[in-house]
Image (tube, rainbow, N blue to C red):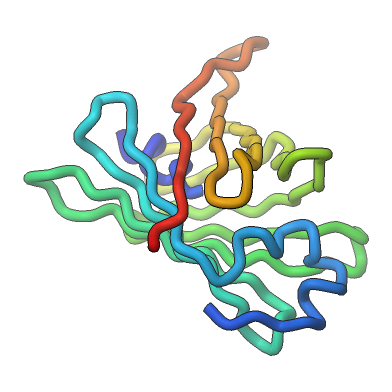
Length: 161
């Protein structure tokens, strides 16, 4: 369950960020989005904020599972000039980390296969975010199982007002 929670992981505005290399992820900036897992009990909230004058987008997320401690993670998205791509670093309160890149698509962002590692755990995963209008996006997360990709979760996260 910890791995699924970490991936579920998955407010000022800066004109320089919207016009610069992080422009493809500016849709998320300044908003909190919340979705419910398929079990109908767990929720995942992501709050995106520009930091460092729009050079970094911070995504703080909390998975709430009633009766259990919250699972908390943070992702920082930044421009990697050496790779010429948007890159990210993810870390969470259970000790897991992940590093990877993000690529804009016609309707959102694609996070190519990357590794997640935590004490005693490791896996390869990939994620796709698809915008659903101006107030929501779908997050689809898959894990590699041998030579196949298996859906871990697919949820719609809606902007909170």
